[in-house]
Length: 384
Image (cartoon, rainbow, N blue to C red; front, side, top):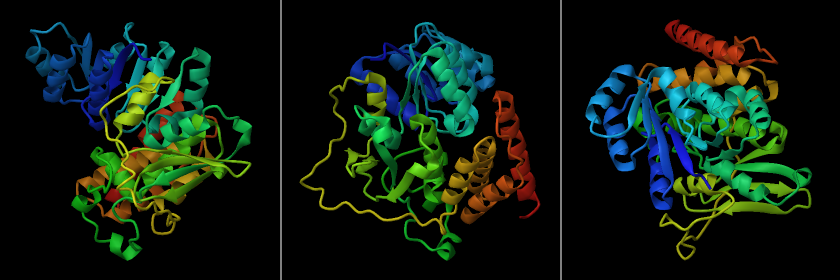
């Protein structure tokens, strides 16, 4: 059970839901970290009274410092402030919920400081899985999955032998464009792409769900979390989002984890494992649950899935290059500068031009991320 918690990304969707869990379980919130939302951070400081709070944006941090000068919370700023907050001596666990590769360096610092990690930032393992898993073992800390799919797999594997696993089955809602053709995707608007049928998430993850890149990233994350090759991971489209994922064993048995689509449930489990605590969160109503549907994903229409499996197979720095290009492409789409299908096209172009380093160190990952972002913007400006 977590005694003291640091939340990296506290003002976002997962961070806010984590605070609901903390309030329910009376978990001590030691430090809060966000990018620039001083107003929301002020409200969180007054509600949870953390020892420290950090904002990456230094001007926003200065504004926050003035706003909460009547409190006992120490305000930190910039990258150095974030590192100080994630390594605070009173925190035994860091929940990482920032979006993108921004979570990588703070997560590394937290692990090196001996903190357990509740991981909701999938890009940390996508970009640097070999480095992170090695560091976790060296420091003797625990890595708990927060994403509903990986939490489900974690639970289905509990008490079973790894060598008995036949395959891991990740479920996918299919997003808002399940069943669309390539031609229909050409006219998708930003508003349509942000309208997820089941989950309430930030804009980046919601767009990734619409392209199905999010599921591709989850494949790579699962490889590192559960030490399995991509060849042993399948994806099944399950629109109801009731079965969160499954594990098939070599005797033909399939174990599935079910639950209401409420992220607070896997968040809580990551903070309390192996205990399960009572809460007032959504529960499944089997009286109203009439059907569960399953189908194969459309790899041709949703080409991001193909890209992710390609990156997973190649390994090295290619997953990092893919992730960086996708982050830029999603940003450009949300700005109205490219179309929905061009998100995947731009990502593919960057991957084609990337020279893979098969044994990267941390600096190689950082360099790959930076160079891939530059290349993505250059390709876009060239009118690809």
